[in-house]
Every structure is written in C-alpha cells, then in structure tokens.
Length: 230
DNA sequence: ATGTCACTTTACAAGTGA
Image 1 (cartoon, rainbow, N blue to C red):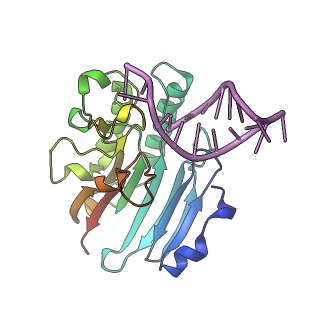
Image 2 (cartoon, rainbow, N blue to C red):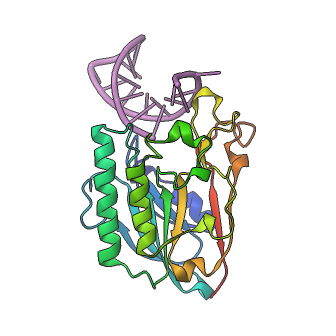
Image 3 (cartoon, helix red, strand yellow):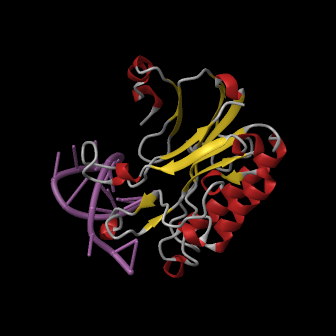
C-alpha cells in the first residue's frame, strides 16, 4: 500500500510505532517497533532504483540492548537467470554491498533483515539439483550474499543450527507448501555485537498454512530472532 | 517446474510480476 493508507493509529493502539516506505502493487517495506525508533532512512546512497520502495532503515533504542541499527531490504526478485531483471538484481546487490562497506561499521550493532530473494546454501533449498543455476539460487546471486557475509555479517539462523528443511517461502503454485518444496530466502544478517546476543532464531511455518488465521496466508512465513540484552 | 495469487488498466478480461 501507499504510505497514506498505512494503519498507524491501529498499530499505535497496540503499542507499536511504524516507519513505512510504501508503494502500490509491488515493493514496500516497513519497520514496526515497540521501542523508540529514530533516524529513519529510505532507499540508500547509490541505489540504482531509488524510485522503488525497497529499503528502510531505523535505529531502535531497545533498553539493555543499546542502539541497534535495523535495515529492512526487499531484494529485487530477478525473474529468470539471464533476463534484464536478473542483471538489475545483481547490480542492485552490488550497490548494497558498496553502501554497506562505505557507510557502516562491522563492529557496530547492525541487523540487516528482509526478503533477500536468495537461498544461501544447499540446505536452504528443498532440491538443490533442481534449483542449481536458477534464480533465487544461482551462483552469482549467492556470491553477492557471501560478499555481504564476508564484510562482517552472520546469517543469524545459522548461528545455532545447520539443519536443513528450515524454509521461509513456498511458491503458491504446484501445491509447493504441501509437498515441502520450500526455500529459505528471508534472512537476518547481524554484525558480531548482534550475533553475540542471539538467543534463538525460528521460522513460524504455521503461518504458511491455509488453516491459520483468515485462510489466506502469504507465500512467506515469519522469521523470528530473539536477542538478549547486552 | 509452474497446478496460485493479487494487482493493474481505460476495466467488465487479460497481462504482469512474484
């Protein structure tokens, strides 16, 4: 939705403050916080597509944790390897990596979350042989993700487990959820001050079931990270 | 590997992008 339609009042009644960067149809990101939120930024310097609402950042002042810089990304999907959109995805990821290294400190608490539209490793894909070389799992996309990790981030779900089958997205088509055809493309990446405080990382697969809620689930499931106070 | 879904337009179906 566009920013004008966002239900700020309803969320405030539930104790949340929200920073939004919305757009009709596709794109749109937000941060909801129960702790004070400041220094909200939208898009980023060097963004090749600044008119697409794909990035929002904010500083969460969460009591004992101290100030945490939170960045929420909606990475370009890329459609198909070899397409113009795929090329645009790689270029956009390169710009994000440049922005990270030029404007952030790997020693400071930074949490990068969102729909990365990239499955990092084989255990994050239900059938690596089917997905090898395909969009969401191609080598060039995964290289970009590894460049982010090499800069100084940890894939938070992987801090405490190497288990496979921990997926966050299942295609609506082909009964993919029922057949277990999932991918882990929704990630949380944290610098050392964040990963050091990670208590737990879980994916709430229940939310993907059509028996949950109003029966119209998203194709993504929530990914939940719990951090302890400093 | 494409069996769905939500959204758009000059709309009352068909294309698009995920």
